[in-house]
Amino acid sequence: MSEERVVLVAENDKKRTSIAAFLSGHGVGVDALTSLPAPSVVLGSSDGLFALVVALNDGGRGRVPVVLKEWKKSHPALPIIVLSPPDLAAGLIPALEDGTIDYLADSANPATLYSAIRSERLKGEARHGEEAAKENLRRLKKEFSLHLRRSLAREEAYDTTLENFMAALDLRDVETYGHSKTVARYSYVLAEAVGIRDPRTLDSIRKGALLHDAGKMAIPDSILKKPGPLSGKEWEVIRRHPALGYGLVRDVKLVREVGNIILCHHEKYDGTGYPKGLKGEAIPIEARVFAVADTLDAVTSHRPYRAPRDFRVARRELVRCAGKQFDPKVVDVFCGMDLAVWEKIRFQTTRLLPPIEDYRPPVSKK
Image 1 (cartoon, rainbow, N blue to C red):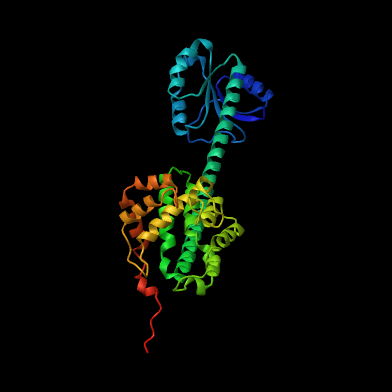
Image 2: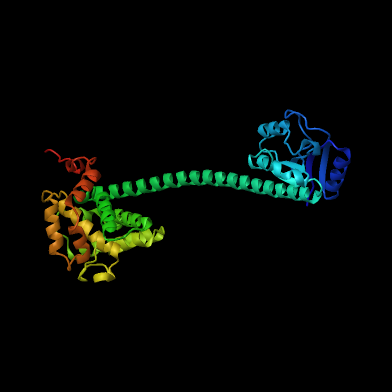
């Protein structure tokens, strides 16, 4: 055992010398006193384990000195070991129970004192380890909190960048201004309703819905904004935007659900969609959810050639096309939800958008 240091108090010179010699022989440093001073006195050295060992005078009949109670009151963390003859030990148990003393050892058997000192050393090491662990935990919590705040700030900045990017893209096509933000929220809520619970997957679906038309930034304005019908070649160009958008997110290594929506958002349940002509459940579930959300927004949004229609009309359209354009199971889930849910989302995502007329170029006056 590494050296411990204790203060030994014993009136009897022979007993004090004997106990000190025994402890010193077992690597315990001893500061010996004949009597216990007032609690205000600094005892011994703090090198190693600091404990107070008091050998009671046999004439005291096993009574704890009043000054020892004062020491414990003033220094509650100070381990106090009392040495007593076996026939008086029972009378000291109340002091052990009420915490005045920490250990009771046999004055005739120094090995019991050594055992008490060793036990206190182990307790001290355990306390030190616990305090170190608590301090480390506090440090880790502080670091985690800091990293979490930074991560949330980066995530918020990232989301804002995505929303602004898609808002700018929406402005290229007056028919779909505000569309990406609204359909992203629709997709998130509908994905939850069909049973997707993982927060990361849901967030990826939201991002995929937000970016679904990212490939349109590679489509020329002459095609994207053409007021009349598109030619066959122009439709071929338009039909490339899912693959173009998918290539964009693949290059920046976004997660699978994001890419699935971008690549497959024009696939149809009956296999007549593009770009791959996927059919039924071969279409990723996130893309099947998005298809319903996309049509919901398209039907209920303003278009230059018609006024917005209400959500009951959208529901009838979804039911009519279930099994052809849409996954009938996803449509069933949608139909089981209160239309007020979707009306609230539309209000929340579009209430700050200016009137659509503000996006139209001014008409020159001749």
